[in-house]
Length: 343
Image 1 (cartoon, rainbow, N blue to C red):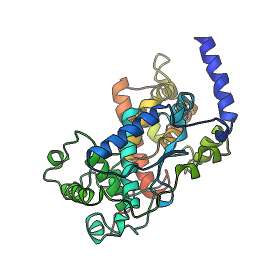
Image 2: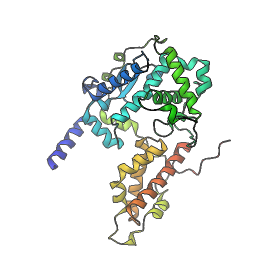
Image 3: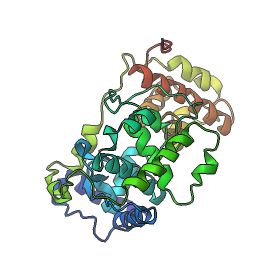
Image 4: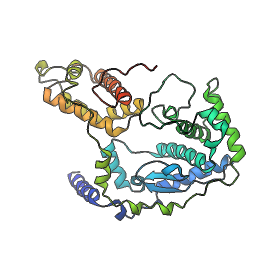
């Protein structure tokens, strides 16, 4: 096992120093190719003729409102997927990849047919010109939006609302009529059903560029650069800001040597804590991971130890982290007071 670990660490260091453009990555022959084929089969099954081209990119998305689907490059190589999991805590499994492919296909269909220019589209989803903000206020109780990607993503922008609605409509076996019966969101799904029957078999109005125009070979930076560029400093003026909260959750050092060290506890459950907070807040795992690591560092500095049972400590720590990250989404800082009420 030690040899295996050391061999991986050596290979990992080598991969991090190599430029992505030099890795010879391709969708062909990978799981991504299989899942894209599944997406195309799903589109055919509902009578949609357009097949959004797919290419490897630095992240999920459709570039510059273009009907192309960018898929993260690390999904084309198991070794890079392992690095992604280590760096970002998790990597997309098959179900997640399909969820994102359906979502991005919704964007691609919207752009290909310029549906956002239609008056009935604006009446259903809102103005496409609305400012796009990375962090947005959500209403967890709203039934005007479908639930697909985590973090109530449909509430982010009318374009995301459309893409999420399309993804639910497209998903085989989603039973959307029954699932959303009585919800205002049902009218959006029924609109999607009508419009796709209307335009699905027609030729898109927008000229679709070839994905070869956006090759992964153009990513002339290292794998390590990719992760360092996605990092940003903690938006916190004083790293001691949460010391009082940590003392509430954990016990002081005089609680007894037999109790587990708090920093060991946080790091042992790091993946679970990060995933749960990211799930319920919609915040990216990178920021949540940095926040959780800060808590572990401060717990070590304070010499704290676990006070209660593992399960209750996990619940309290996750609830605390969720509250902090939700506040961050509204204020862009981790040490601000409660967000002001909307007018």
